[in-house]
Image (cartoon, rainbow, N blue to C red; front, side, top):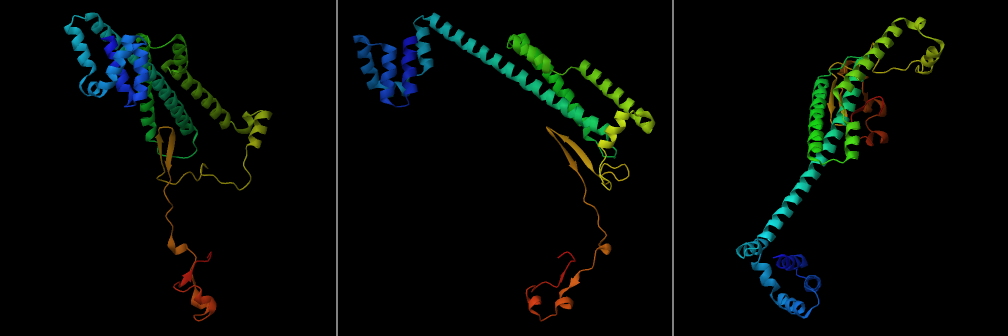
Length: 281
């Protein structure tokens, strides 16, 4: 059956190219007199073989003649191929899951940190969604890593790399506590004003001051417009700022072209179809 399978594979792989088929059959059958005789006979019947013979047919014939070894070897090879394919899949899933969890952790930490230090009020309904997405990804990453490791899909270097990049709840809690302590110390220092700063800190503050007259939306007194919404997406953050509502009664009056240019002047004809312009125009 092995020889018959090799011949069938040569026929199906030739794609109708006789030169390619002849070369494949020569490699399979050899250059002996029997091999050359079989080659020419197969070449003449290659189209019929391709139309009527399948790998299953060859396997059935082998089993009918008691060639159980070949059939079992095929089954074993198929099982091994499936096993290797499964290991490759588990390894890829582990890397993908850990990468996603790491990305979501970075995004979540950046949004929560900026939210605590913000000097304006913005609706952050998406913060909880970001936290939920991160925790879900962390759980899936841990599960994928453990499954791949248990199945033997990971090498020693894979395990070291994934463990070093896999977020863990204990480490996250420690980092969170450290951030909170730093912020509390910063807020206490700011509450004391200049009296709580040393010379270096005062100089640093001066260097970071903006030019006189600079205005920012992050100003305590101004802030972002009411109704501003912030939504955390995968890999970016979307901030929707509503357009201001203008009082049309406070807009400058439009300029009547007939009054300025005269209704029959050459200049007026250049603006045919237009009755007025705003001051900027």
